[in-house]
Figure 1: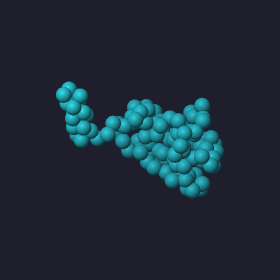
Figure 2: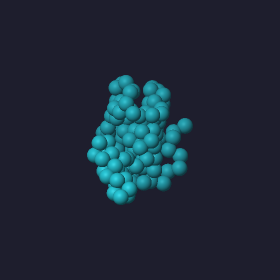
Figure 3: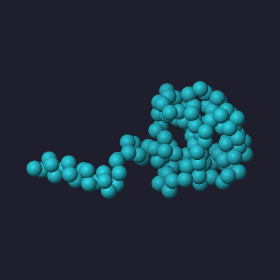
Length: 123
C-alpha cells in the first residue's frame, strides 16, 4: 500500500509542479543550456566590454554551433554587437529573461548536442 501511496504522491507533485528538470541548477547557471552543449561563453562583464571577442565569432562559425543565447539583464547596446555576428552566420539568437538565472554568464554559443570542449570560458 505504501508503494501505491508514494506513486500517487509523485504524480500529484508532477501535476502541481510539472516534470522535474534534469540538471536544473546547471542550466540556470548557463542561460538554460547544459554545460556539455556549450562551445564558448562570456561573462556579463565581458559582454559589456567595447571589444568583440573573436572567440565568439569563431564559435559561431563552428558547424556544431546552433544558436546564441544572451542574458536579458544586459543592455541592448552590448548585446547588439553579438546579435549582428549571429545574423551574419545565420545562427538564431535568444535573449534569456529568467529571474531564476544564477551566476555571471552573459553569453553562450551552444549546440543542440553534446560537444567535447574542455575550456568554454573566454579568458
